[in-house]
Image (cartoon, rainbow, N blue to C red; front, side, top):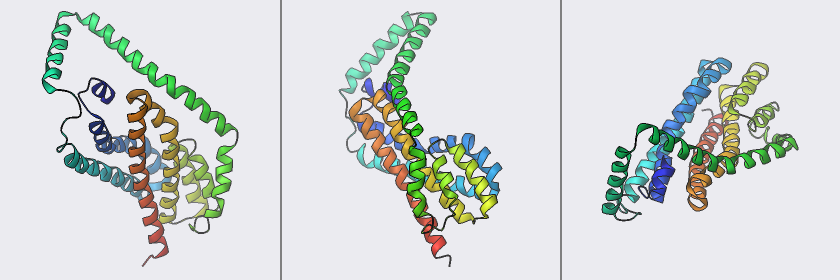
Length: 257
């Protein structure tokens, strides 16, 4: 929808970026409720699972509030980045008249054709990128990264087995939660240690996702310039918010009083 509105010049570049930031809250709710909650509560228990979901939703809610604040400051001062609204409304009226003249079958065919076209643009960029990352991971990048992160275990007060969780972040968030549940049982780590380990893995997982999936998808939908800007702004806000949670957990663990 954003891509369609942007190419029709209904929304400008700033409108798209602000909308992406505000949309982090419903995206976070969708991820938490339908993907993370069933696994997190089952393998980590209600205490750690609910804290994990609460802190992550806090991050995404904060990004959405920041998006609303930025939108009020920027968009109200620069209400139009596109052409004349009168011309736009006239073109919209013409499109509506054309739609009324055509039948339901013709409109359905046009919608399907446009949908396949949009899917083709995304697949053309996303499929080769995903294939490249699969090759890189099969060459041993996950194992190498786990070995690189090994010296961080003692300063972070995490067990050596936490490397398994960090390595799982290259696969999926479900794999991270499953690995963390096993370590909680075996290592008997504290709630703060578990949350710290999970949020570090979340930073790694989403960082990889922005490069592997979000960047090529956004470039395919919005073009190279805006696609890069959307990915950078969204990635920076999300990664900064999650990193702040990690730092807060480290401080609480270092100074428990």
